[in-house]
Length: 123
Length: 106
Image 1 (cartoon, rainbow over the protein chains, first blue to last red):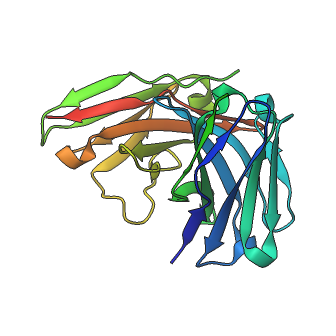
Image 2: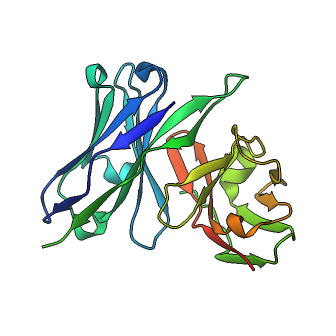
């Protein structure tokens, strides 16, 4: 079955970087894009970016594009989210989520999620 | 920039119909998805393409679009449906979640 398993909780100081992994199993890794979403404590969802595990193409939300890098390791069927120059406002749970395709070929995402990785940024 | 506006909370009694709205200019142009998030859990997609259900989602979850407002309808709401519901849409380089609606069933 499809599974997305993320790395464990992180505690970082302001200005540092964090790298979160999302290991995909149960399907052909290159077939579906992976999205990243974060959720600050008590807040709503924020879409961060997307990576195509096939070619590595990425797209980031505008206000994070200077600090966010999404990468993939096809041999490990793993995608990575690296956020640099961390601020206290980056304290959040970070999720990866996979795209799917329905019977008509329409692409959508969000029916498979990782368990979430808490990242705490504090001095 | 695009925004999606949702009511902060909706309350219904068990068995009643719950309706959660999502409004904004983006809704008139693009399909909307709905996510359900229970405390301590990852979100879960319950509707896409305004009214399509992924596999495993009960048919008491449905959606409708009336121009600049889309509505998530939960027919015969159950206590287990208590959660925060987020609408989401995307156009070009913009991807937006609504602020979320807390559904209380009691």
